[in-house]
Length: 150
Length: 75
Image (cartoon, rainbow over all chains, first blue to last red):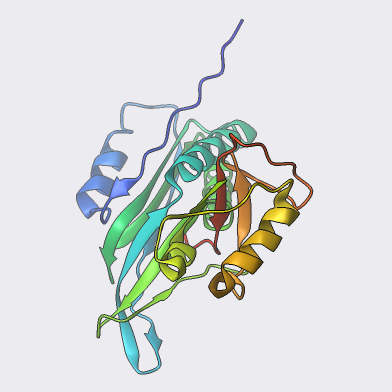
């Protein structure tokens, strides 16, 4: 009998570096049944609000629930689109404007599955995972980020 | 009952959790929060019980892990 095991997810402390992304891509050269990768990178945007500019986002989360939710989202989408593999990284803590806070990387034999799965993962992470963000302005005041109303 | 708070709710209450009298269900929890913590009243939140989203009819037990979650902001 096959036992299902879900790969655990853990948050990434601080920003996701270009080196992290490059290493992840390089790690796939041994998987020669892959024909397509799709990669999404979320970057902290220096939005303006009331004459102030966002300098950074400080991410926090209900970690137990969020880590469990991301692990399940990843697993469900791998199965549905029969991906070769998929990787997700999300920052916790402070990420400066211009830095990367979300990394979603899907791989499959053909492009359509990889692209669709990548989009689905991004949407579900934004909508279903209890992650919270304090947008810190250049004058050190802050406001809470909201992806959309519940 | 201990209620965990996150994001703007923890910030507004100035603490990571609050205590309320025992309530029967999520609807009762929302009522108790309204009465005891009026500063949280204007805030929109979802209730999670044992790390799963809970609707208003869900019955609460003393050993449940209960959390109030403000709007999500991942990505």
